[in-house]
Length: 225
Image (tube, rainbow, N blue to C red; front, top):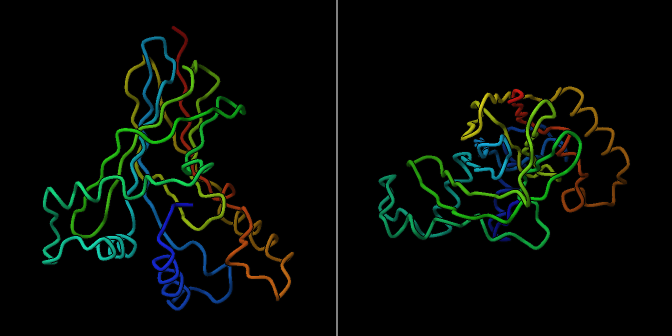
């Protein structure tokens, strides 16, 4: 999941749990909502070389981050250049082994992605948007076997959606489609996983890794040259 200050995570969790969500651990998740933008960068041989990811955070989380970092002190909804520079990279301090909640596959084969590069962030007075680049370890041919890009948090602390069509930069004869999961099936899988927990277990600390069940994904294919 995203790296959040401990006190901020606790405050967010308490606020969400005591809001109008259903009672119980299933209703307590997720805590943060992110609209995700995906740009797939191809070379002139229709090989994928990098992904540019855009995260737009929900208003509540954005408000907490702005307040926690002491930004927008006059509450006019605008950051100074200095404040925007401080905001840049606030969500790029990843723990070792964190996959960045972005997963790439060629067909069914998992692909290696670099850590975040070229990151930045902005604030429109309501929501924070951050961007970063992730490079593929080696160029990946894209043809009838699709390049698949999935956005999800395995622990489902964060809920990702892909509300806009993916962008393809470079390449020839390539198209992208977005697919969404069957949420009824995903919710059923979550409830089934929660049945294994006994009352003495802190579900919040050991929430089942069901995030992939809720994953939205982009599939890119290219016509034969």
